[in-house]
Image (tube, rainbow, N blue to C red; front, side, top):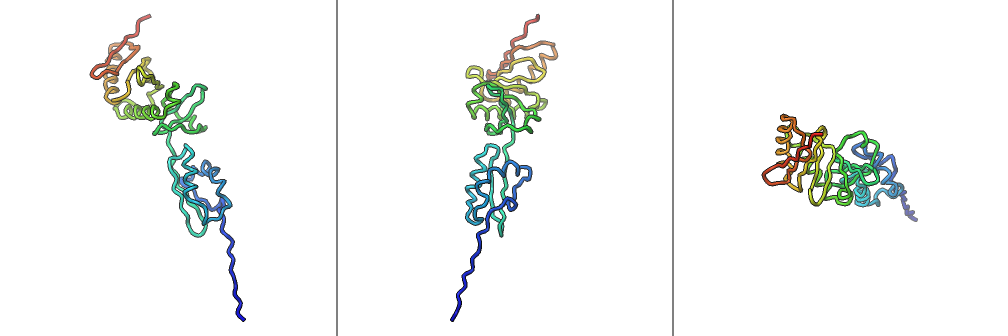
Length: 219
């Protein structure tokens, strides 16, 4: 009489110690997003579900998830990098990524100095926030300017983008496009005003071929 044996293998479960997250510094932020997957059978966990869960957090741009034999999950994430900061109507400060996405506030972001977006239009419209990032990049591309010099950015339908630079007590109107060209003109105007010790209250660079300066009246 032959005996037939049946081997039973207990399904390997996803454990915290078997999850590898790269870069390592993102582990603390990613792990809470994986709670629902811990304890599930290793080979039955959906990698797509995990990546979707992580990418649903605005702090992360993408996530690549792989299984590694026998029971390891490897997760590579790409974080969104703050480019600006938004101060909302409640006085709350939020980092803004390069694509205009509002990111969760963290203590680490408080230690960085970003150009500040202000006004309800920036709160409501991600396309305007992304356009503001484009403006900042245009400034960075000009020799003699840097994003650290940008104090605040506002927006209105009439004026477009308004810029304030540190050390320059003037409003700079830039409209809605051609920021690089306009900022080069502004740079030449600011250089001239400084050489003549003239204080400009408004520097209006919205026009096609000229910059209009409204001079500050002497007290």
